[in-house]
Amino acid sequence: MRMVKPLARLHEQLRKLPGIGSKSALRLSYHVLDMRREDVEQLAKSLLEVKDHVHLCRQCFNLCEGTLCEICEDENRDHGLICVVEQPQDAAAMERTKSYQGVYHVLHGVLSPLDGIGPDQLKIRELMRRLQDDSVREVILATNSDVEGEATAAYLAGLIRPTGIKVSRIAHGLPMGGDLEYADELTLYKALENRREL
Image (tube, rainbow, N blue to C red; front, side, top):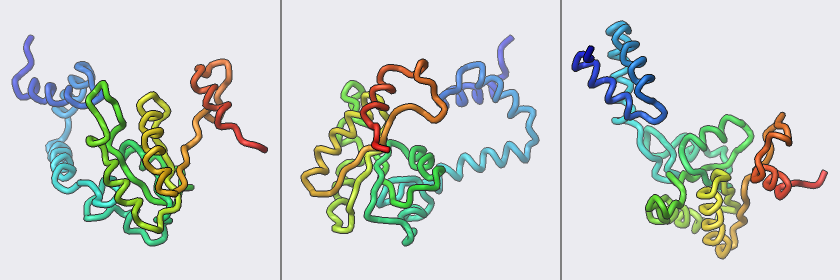
């Protein structure tokens, strides 16, 4: 039996979302059909609001509603400490730790020559412009520990070191509660490499 056209169109649109396969999209489509009209209207309104009102901070390129994000506007944050992350969700993850009090710079990706992503496709030029401010003391490179993240961190470190600004890299290794026997070789290598004196 073929799906009715409106439901089929919703299914097709939901399938375009990352991590949503055909079965999940179908399940969500039927769920939307079962929702109260007011809830569907709120969902549609929220989707449009995100597109209309969320954009990039002109300083750090994180997500915001105004000209600057809340973190860049916060005078209590340490603006001399910049944490470079790949995506806005990485900055959100760092904020959940409640331990970082600096500011961010979001690259919006990583270097990936195979995918045609070079320095010009990322917010690297904008980062280097920010580093011309004499108040910046340290840049923390917090890209992922995969091949592209490591390559991006190495590339950025090469650009930043000549400025005299301290460059650091977040440590990678074993998660809390992780067992050595289940860790892969790269994780163990990074855990050893990033060891510290007690």
